[in-house]
Length: 335
Image 1 (cartoon, rainbow, N blue to C red):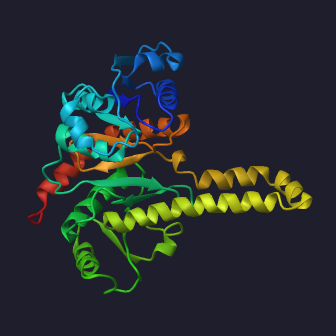
Image 2: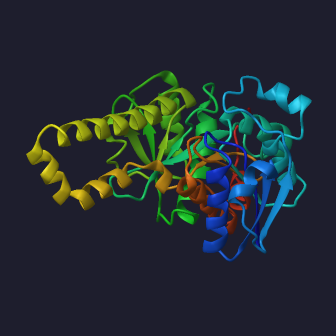
């Protein structure tokens, strides 16, 4: 049985989508057991009895706009997110899923769950939409901006194992996001990283990738520092939102366009779905001793359910154990 800890109070719309997404996951998967942490009074209207659901009450939880998660951790260990993480740390669960503040989840990961000895940095690795509907792993999307090339190689190895074992990609390819596709492009950091990735026997290196190809590339993993990849991710989100608004405007521009949209209703629904990150899952906080999944802060029921599904699949595939074994056996450059 896979045991999951869920933060029921993290997220813009908590606790309703968290509770409903949890119940949906329990109905869908018969090999998971979930312990839900949160204010039982606020969760009660959405809760239902289930033999594999356990609720741990706490009235304390983090606000989505929390500015000082370190202070919160030091002064209140009864916050729902931190209680769920401690539950994992104590060996009572295999993974945690939360839609709470990202930096608080990173802080909790470092102080409670702890970083894998073989990983020198932690990365945020969301699965972003792609033209073929299979998604791509993007990292680091914001955990750090100060990296060494060897840190990105660690991420590439980890993400390759995740792509193979969880996303079922054969010989997953790693692309380095850069300003051009030619060898020798970019900053000195990018050049050094390119050389290191190209020489590695632990990954399949695609080469440099320009941001304009992010949605269309055949590469399975898109790699860069936290500053660059975060800009790429937010640009994609903004572009998708903008395209949706332009499409709505044009549909409403004339009666003929409106009639045409009615005939294209199913196609438009598929178009919207292909750009919706909630269809794929949350972001893995890569580098901790246990699986930590960050669901989108604005998650609705389906999005949160997919975050739980992703956590289940990570545990099922034993990704952390495999990564630890691979990184420990190879010669890892010093910090």
